[in-house]
Image 1 (cartoon, rainbow, N blue to C red):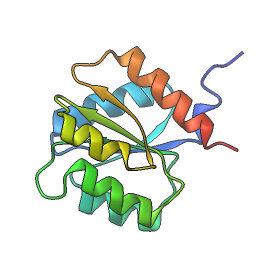
Image 2 (image 1 turned 90 degrees about the horizontal axis):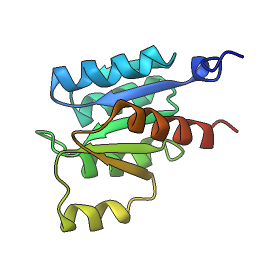
Image 3 (image 1 turned 45 degrees about the vertical axis):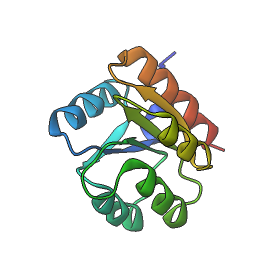
Length: 131
């Protein structure tokens, strides 16, 4: 069977202010058959959410401007069903506690991460919204 067939219908929004991180995450996803849109800020992501439908957003916590947690709050208002996967080099207890209060943040991965770990998490999250 074709393991990628399920991925075809999913579009993932990648939000990171670091272009190289966006490129790597998008490449991993596209290899698996997901469609991706990449933006450099929470503000830009909100514009995308207003015009397109996504199965998942993957977002860095530490971004200039709107940080990941603030962006997640804004996402949940713009698109309440959208699960958010957070990438972070370092999540301190305060950030962790703040993220726990955001119902749309469905998971986080600390950098450096394995691509297999990222993809497993993505697959789980997009499948939970597929119904």
